[in-house]
Length: 215
Image (cartoon, rainbow, N blue to C red; front, side, top):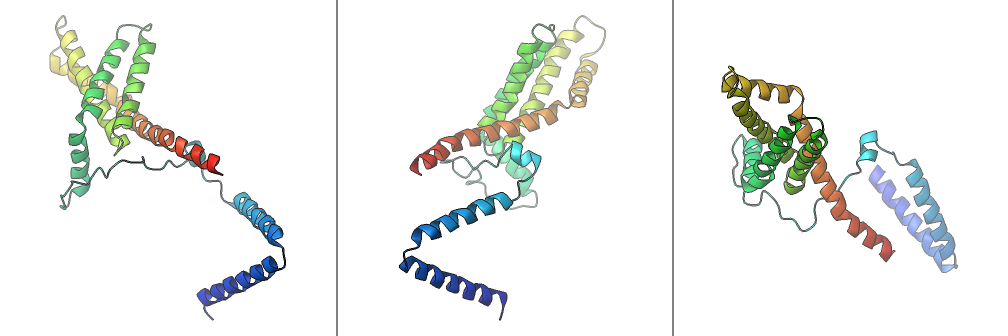
């Protein structure tokens, strides 16, 4: 007898046993046993990694359409072209937010008092990029930081190259290099991912609360 046949026979035997006990008036005992079994299964279930406990899986956003519904490209670079397609559909989520990031980064150059405000603006900007760019939050966070770096380097290089003898290109490349070395693009990627994760978790919270009330 195969494993599948044995499982089917065991299931039928268990069903007959439960039917007999239910007919004899042991429904409450059956429910108690089922609850005990559920608690035991929960106790033995693997708890997952530290990251999975820190960031529990979040469901997709309810009511949102497929972001690639109108995407028809089937070539060898489908993944890359799909990213470009998503970026083109929501430019505000990375270009507009990148401009805000650049403003926050410029504030940091004016002294330590404004550094707190600068940190809030830059951190909030890339989180907002992931929040708005829900189809691919990490991508929008990354691109917002890249746009912000280029705008910041261009503006600050233009201001610094005027009174100094260093050409604009040298200042620009130095500033871009400095931001990359400081892992600003990676920070944007992670913060963007968190923004999308936070949006999904907050959207799922009312549904979970309603489900608990129904119980």
